[in-house]
Image (tube, rainbow over all chains, first blue to last red; front, side, top):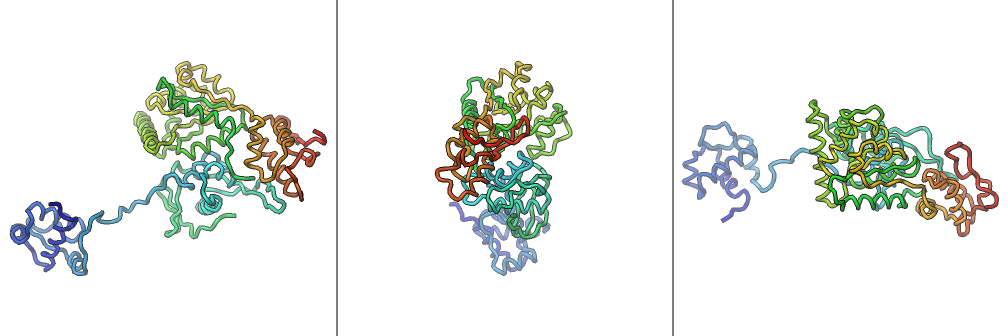
Length: 199
Length: 255
């Protein structure tokens, strides 16, 4: 019969929760599981940092940190032991496409980038203005002094931008919680503060 | 001006050739030459196509040799070039294959684009490197350049035979100009002005877009443009600049 994830490790925790050292032979006699199952469960506890690996062979005891954790209710569940710590790469988002278009165009207006990158998004202009502000703050893009003349009577014109830091094919991403721009190409983070749309 | 990409006859030709490439008989004939005069929309199309399809894009520079080409291509692929020359080539093949494979799974077109290829087309080493990569992977290889690219490639029969599909960007037809104006211009334009823009621009997209800017500026100032801005409305107004002389082109009084 297939056991639910964490069944044997959690039962092992219940036995070891007294804080004493238990020998493998004793555990085999007191628990209903095989020797291999108990060893695998012990490895699982060690992976979670509940048990020290440097105890004597065949002797199992929870570490001090493990004892605190299990007494406060910690139990083994299915899934990874901890967050993988890597930053998720974005694939085929509007910003990724916009970055690709910027690299080809070199000097561009927001409109030119939108025309190349949009795919029926609700408001690509708003999204791109945010992203452009972040790139300008991080020193990836500069706005040029000359503007494209606007067409409406009161239009101040359209800003022209230039990509000056073309670090590679992967689009840098803004991480709003940390308020940084992370560049996958260089592996660097640039602190930039709150992102507001550029005008 | 609206920020939209307008599909013209040249765009349709390019996409048609690309689809044709997928169903080719000889698998090694996977190269495509895209050429035409400046200002016909090649770079705009390449910017859009590569952004939409996650294609690989590299812009060739004057003075590149085979080694520099591979070095820059690896950088483009997001990889720090290894020290060994053979390893660099291997990595290019591996990464391009991975990207092509991912595109196949996602069922989207894939290719790699060498823009401004005429700058390196005279260098046998670079062209043979491109052919080598193309042969090894047999994925669409798009060589983009100006009008003379095809003529230069004729020097290399082994490359020319692998690039039977040629997309020559032609000046926009009147229908294209109408589509461009309808798609991008925020004010309505009458057919006579569309016809004038087509004739004055010589079918160059760059000049048509410039004309759209002038028409919009004029149209936004009119109280009532009726069914669209006409030649008579814009009589005497500058609408674009002549690319050969640099002089302003004005709309004639009677057309």
